[in-house]
Length: 198
Image (cartoon, rainbow, N blue to C red; front, side):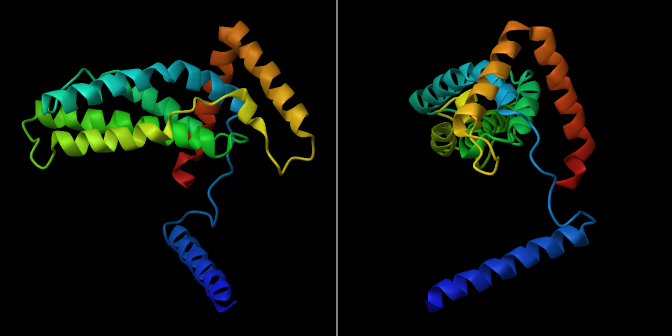
């Protein structure tokens, strides 16, 4: 029982330290709440999931050759922006966040390697370390987000209704690209207006 009480005290102490740090930096006690609907995250996840195969091939090339390899990373920034947005999915739970973090970590790793090689500053980076980091991060993004991730136990409606609502919105987005892009633009704009509060 003593250890449980100690964990509670330590947790409360860490929570207060985090709050004090946020306040010292001029931020509110809590970061803004998540805001992106899982239906948008699911569409983004499907569109971004082919990147996983590119990363697997890149990691295999690095592993097989025993050399760090530079590739064109010019398109990564747009992908990273979408993955950052996915981290704030309302109903997506751990799966959507893990997918976004895993894939964005891989893209950043490849980008860092390519930029270091281009600038002749690859010291400290080894093919073995790069491959290990990529494979570990790939494990996080094995499952592509789905509208079925919509369950939120804090909402006062039944699980089946949450899934049905998310599926209907997801299907609307697939059928109407203009609607999807318009809503995505709204959420991007919202994120830009609050990102300084994280």
